[in-house]
Length: 373
Image (cartoon, rainbow, N blue to C red):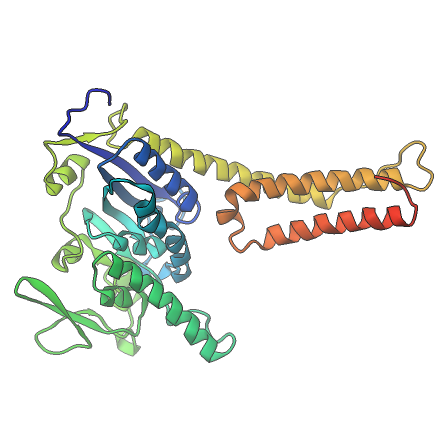
């Protein structure tokens, strides 16, 4: 990268692969974008290729109705890294381009925060799952409706921020939503409902209109919207279709000026971005394993008899110190990986309560004269 021509566009390429909400979450994405800022990238290409397989190691993918709408919260957490935080941190704003291969379930919302979206020829974006069915019949209906409305407003806002019609998002998230379109003066126009002369995008999924298992497996369902490369291009959500980085740079019209940063292995991806994302994936796997071991160890701490300990206070305090050390080690892991391993912070709260209980026990024993420490 030392001899880049002055008129070259510095292109930073990162691929968001693996499991959305595990391998792909706020911290690794933000760290990869920080590397792009350090390298003075002019263009950031974000390839969305989340794991959408039924089983690890097999080629069969999930059906469109197997997505989880609540994964939107992962996109909600990542979203500022590409928008408000980027505006605050970058002196010169880069062009951010999303390149969609598999942006399913919660990842489907992420590309919509930007206007520059491209697809691979077999690219798909959707499979969100039904907002209508969220919460089932639990709790108060008014509260349920309010929670759904808040979620709907947020994901629609992401689309509006990227310059996309929020009706597309509503068709993605609601099986009851009926949406049609037609092209007028070269641009798509949408109709809520269906009428002759309009092309139906999604129906209401009721009775005989409900998608069959065969439809879902073949990606032909229309109860909720999943965008293919052809449909996304017709609706002008996608600006083009590209199956290689060279094709994408050509579609963008920058193939003659583009210099892909830090691509020593020439695989079409910036090595620094790959390192950041891989480091997170490796670290979180190890952290998950270690937390399970620490939980086991914490539950199996025992007081062991000690010499010159007639009242057992030394043994008790030694066990308390061991439990405290384990708790502190677990909390340190949650400080780094809690966004994935403990998103609601229930485990952290439990650990902190246990630590406080240990301190209370020590204080009470000192007060009663049952030993020091």
